Length: 145
Image (cartoon, rainbow, N blue to C red):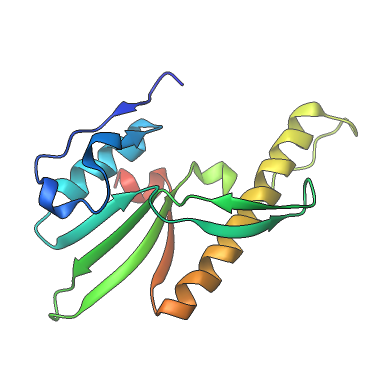
């Protein structure tokens, strides 16, 4: 990937996991890492440290999902919340539009991506519900307001 690399946190004590193995896979992820590292209301964070099993209807196999982020934050009212955050382009969060050509390779690829993502997110929602956490998907609309 053109926009991937290693992230070195300035506040290593906030990172839960191995701070030498933090990898971003997009500039959006890198931007969110900087936010987590520098924001005083983020008490703890990690990247791809949680494993959630899910069933993939695309290949009919059980797989493992590594969500982009886990954050533990202090809310304005003094309560603490825990969230799993996934960062995706907005176009991957909605079903792809059907093309005029019936057998469009691009449409098939986008459909598989959407179905896979949806399966992961349903598993993540259940995982979070059991722990009273929040699952949230962030897109470019959230990251660049």
